Image (cartoon, rainbow over all chains, first blue to last red; front, side, top):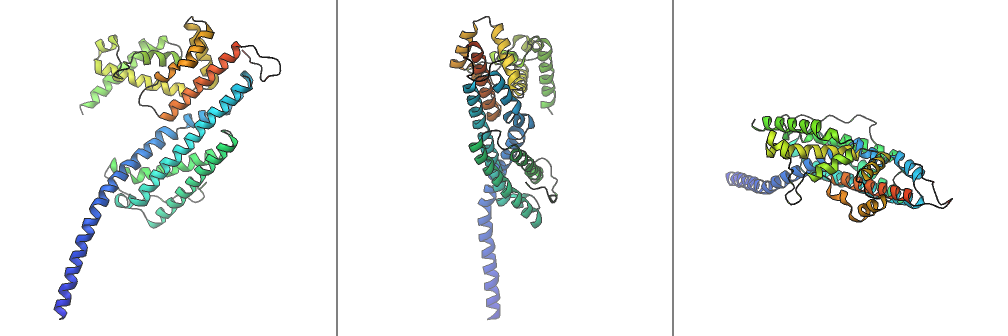
Length: 191
Length: 155
């Protein structure tokens, strides 16, 4: 009787292992898609949205002063409206790409990089803070215009750069076989 | 390994283009328009006979595309004041009347086809917006404003 139970248990374990393997296979495929998405999000942030020359131009106060000194009021209004649209588009793009990176970290990062629980928690908090900052920035830009929140812009850019840096390390195995434990974020580096 | 010498060829061709051709064009806006004019709108490929004869058509095409993207980035980084100055100088160089030039640029928006293909859409949007404002500023300079209706344009 005991032998029968033992064999049944071994059989059940093998069956469960089989189910686990079948279940994991499409998940791995999904993971590779998330990986590509994360890589694209990282490139979009680092090369398209976070370069200082672009941010400096979008929020350049000297441009506003120049328009005020050179053009009549309707042109000033047009300038502010145009820059507001671009600033809002920039904030929306940052939020979208950060969400893509967050999805990768939530779903697939642990398959590719060895993340400690502490690092994951710190990263989760950083993502949450960044998404909140992006939303706040969108509201402030919408209500107050492109020059209403230079500090939030600065803080958002700094945190986004930190998140990019950590994500780059998570995705570093794509460039080299090197896999390492991610460094824990320094204290007091939040928004 | 085979792409390494080719990349070096492209860099050499781009340097040649900068030195011989682009250096004769003083401003980024002139260069952007010149480089866009070297592109076939149907294929998106760039053509430059001199460069192709010295290197190869493929290398010339890539060198022109590289320079186009570089000039685009330079122009995006320019201040509004700088863009207005560049546009004014370009307008003068075309020898058309300022009114006609500004009206045509406002209606046709030719700068929209002057940007390289592989650029960040937000940067392109920012540049288009800057051109639009620059045109409005130049137009405002042409039309007289009654006293007290806003800022008096300085020249």
